[in-house]
Each structure stands twice: as structure tokens, then as C-alpha cells.
Amino acid sequence: MRGERVLYSIFSVAIALTALLILYPAYHALELSFQDLDSFISKPVWIGFGNYADVLAMPEFWNALGRGLVFSGTTIALQIVLGIGFAMLLDTAIPAKPLVRGITVLPYLLPTIIVALTFQWMLDSTVGVFTQFVRLFGYSYIPWGESGTVAMTVVIVLSVWIWTPFVTLAFLAGLQAVPGELYEAARVDGASAWQRFWHITMPQLRPVLTVVLLLRAIWMFNKFDIIWLTTRGGPLQATEHLPILAYRKTFEMYEVGQGAAVSAISFVILSVLILFYFYFFPLDEKE
Amino acid sequence: MNKLTLGQRSALYGLVCVTVVYSFFPIYWMIISSFRDDNSLYANFSLLPGPFTLTNYEVLLELTDYPTWFVNSILVAFGTVCITLVMSVLIAYSVTRLQFRGKMAVVGVMLYAYMFPPLLLAIPLFSLFVKLGLADTRLSLMISHCTITLPLGVWLLWGFFKQIPLDVEEAAMVDGCSRLRAFVLVVLPLTLPGVLTVAIFSFLLSWTDYTFALVMIGTDSLKTLPAGLDTMVGMYELRWGELMAGSTLIALPLLVMFMFLSRYFIHGLSAGALKG
Image (cartoon, each protein chain N blue to C red):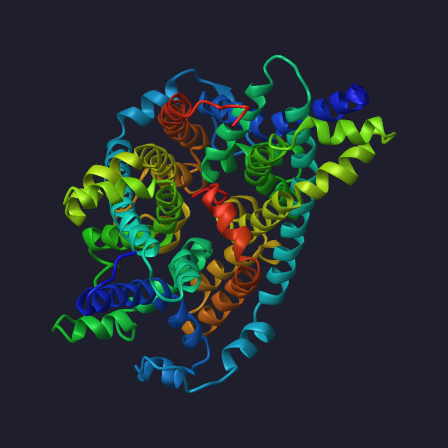
């Protein structure tokens, strides 16, 4: 075909730039994790697996890994349950559907800084609107700045609030694809609403559920900004998970190599999840 | 749809109201707080809007670095959108039109990169920028944002381009168009919705990014809005009125775009355009 040579050259340049932009940094991250560095400008010393040995021997690492699993597990479960609920609701004949759908999606579009600030303002221990609310029930305020459990609950609630619309939209699209005859047939057979949901809707949505579960796992496990902006990993490291540990090691404790090792470990966990994704959803050029 | 009883219908409307309040109340509260003066912010707990004042906005725009951050955000977002559009159109188009071994690997790497969490890329990128002497510049932030937006663009546009049959442009080329003209005049108009979706989400990702901005930029006057607003939290006693005004102004362009372009938003979001 004509013009192929031009196309090939444009393509090669674009690919080279992309590799430089994405693959090289990924490689560089691994490289850093094998070096002893106290800043980005100091001279690197190759120390093999030294950083990994140090990191794996630290209790902080294992605590952070555990907290990350608690955080991502809880947020994913809640997002999926709520998201399916919202999708079912938005799929019924409700008034002003486009508007309601738009409003339900909004939290997902907001920058995390706004969400973090607004919720901090609402949780303010003297004048926050949530504080006023819990006072009606005899509590004085919500101690998210002091109690580790409460802080963890708050970041989980915020994460669920922001990222549930992803699940809602995915399931809403999935619901459109369920053939209506299935429901008709079930109705004729006398199936209850719950039975229809459990025996028709859910099996039909299995593929959607798998992709949502994987993508949520990939993204929630490495979520950094919302936790950092809300609690900075505190109080007393109660909300510090692997990404925050990596950030603090690198930019606050000047252990660049160890920070990179923490990142590299997250990276391996992440890659396993992504490989699962490719296994379940192979790329297909035709569709 | 079968008829609902009155009870079922009220339950349904009740659920809709709960959903709307749940999703919208924090945004509503941010906006009305931004228009209250200190007296009413710290003493008035009415859930209704008012009293109304612009003091917070005046202070924010006159006494803080907010306008500078705003300009930086616009510059970085604009640069990111331009680079992303050009590169992703080129890559996605050539991947669908060229036949060579391993081309699906390109798409695979893009999808892989697209799933990357920002922080994992930010740290090594920063180290590279330090080596290149680019650290702490708006250009470095722009390039970093492209590491998210470019895979997204290629991924979305690949989906668009592969649906356009080769015959369309071959017909144009038989009629004497060059490959470039056939592309610009025939293929591109057909994929305009896709290109627009990529533009919207590249803007959105760059405009809302905090993680890259935190790692890449140290100088206050080079910060973008999300990172800049965050420094205001640390610096002064918490001036909630101004912080809420600042938040409202960051959200405003997004809300306006969402209102007018909601079709593209929903399409892009359903395709997973916002990683996170």
C-alpha cells in the first residue's frame, strides 16, 4: 500500500519516544532498587539485593503491606456492592435519569485534593457539618486525627465515595446487555425479584464483575494521593501503606534505594494482577 | 415495565433522593461554604445556602499564589493535551493500519502502562529528570502527565481506528488522495468523537493530578492548582473559606465541561478513561 514507508517511520519515532517515556522509567525504578543512594544526585553504589533484604526485615514494611490489603480489600468490596446497587437503581424507570446519573458520576471526576479538603472541612472537630451531626447523637466529634481505626475508616469511606462510580458505570453498561427475555421467562416461572437478580443478573454480569474486580484491585492497592492528602499516613502510621512508605523512604528519609525497593515489590504484585487481566481479557484486534 | 405500587414507587424515589444527597452533598457544601464569611462559617450551621459574600474569592485571588498556580495548571494541561493528541493519533492509527509481527505487543505495553499507578512512575521519572537537569520545571510535569495520558489515548483510539474499515481510505487513495490527505480528510473526521474524548480526559487527568505535581515540582511559583492548594493547608492556620473557594474554582471547569459534554464523559468513563 502507498504511504507505508511514511507510516512506518512515524510509527518508529512515536514508539521510541513512548518507550523512553514509559519503559525506561520502569527499568530505572528497578535499577534504583539495587543501589545505595541517599539522594537523587549522589553517586550510586551497586549493592545487589541489599535494599530488598533491608526492606523485608523491617516491621514497617509488613505492617504497611497488611494495611494496604485491609484498605484495598475493604474499599473494593464496598465499591462493588454499592456500585451494583446504584447501577440497578439507575437501570429502573426513575425520574430525571440523565441528571441523576450525572450526579452519581460526579465524585469520580473531582480532583482528590478537593475531596480530601472538603471532607476534612466537614469533619472539622469543632465546626464541621458532620461534627454537628454526630453531636445530635451525643458524641462530641469524630476523632479521625487521633484514632488510627477512625482514620483508616475515613480514608476508606472517601475512597469508596470517589471510586464507586467506576463500578456503577461498568455495571450499568453490563445491564443494558442482559437480554430482556430472560427476565420475562423467569417472571412467567414465578421467580422472585431476588431470585431474578441472583440467577439471571449476576451470572450475566460475571465478565463485568471480573474486569471490575481486577481493575479495582490494581488501582486501589497502589492508591496514594487520597490517603496522603487526608492523613499523610498518620496518625502514628495507622494509614501508612506501601505507596506512602515508598514516598516517605524516598523523599523524607532519603533512602532512595529502599524506597525504590518498596516500589519494586508493589510493582511485582501489580504485575501479577495485570497478567491475570491479560489472561482473562486477551487483546483482540477484531471485535 | 410492569406497574409499581404506590409503596414501591415511594421507596424507589426515596432511594433516588438518598443517592443524590450522598453523591452531591459534599460538593454542595464545598460551594456554599466558599461563599460564607468567617462569622457564618464558624457559627452558622444552616444547611441552606447563604449568607453570601465574595470575600474568600477576593482574598484567594489577591493575596495568595492561586492565580499563578492557575496559569501553571492551564499551561501544563494544554501542553499535555497537545502532545497526547498528536502522538496517540499517530501511534493508534499506524498500529491498526500496519501489518508486522509483535504489533499487538505495542497495544499490550500501552494497556500495561495505563494500569501503572502514578507514584510508581513518578519516583524513577523524577530521578531521570534530575539527571537531565529538568527537575522542578513545568516541562517535566507535562512529560510526566503524558505517561498517563498517552497510553490512555492510544488505547481509546485503537478501539476507534480498528472499527473503521480500510476500504474507506483505500477508496480515497484510489481517487488520488495521498495517505496523509486520506487520513486527514476521511479517517480523522470519522474518529472525531474518539479524539475529543481523548482530549477531554487528557485535560482532566492533567488538571486533577496531585501525585506527579507533588513529586516533580518543589518551587511554589511553579506548582499547579492541586499541589498549590495543598501547600496552603500546611502554611497558614486553616482558612476554610479560602480553601473551599480554591476547591470550587478547581472543580468549576470540570463541572462546566461535564454539563456540556456529558455524552463524551460517559463514553470515556465507561471505557475506563480515568485510571484510578
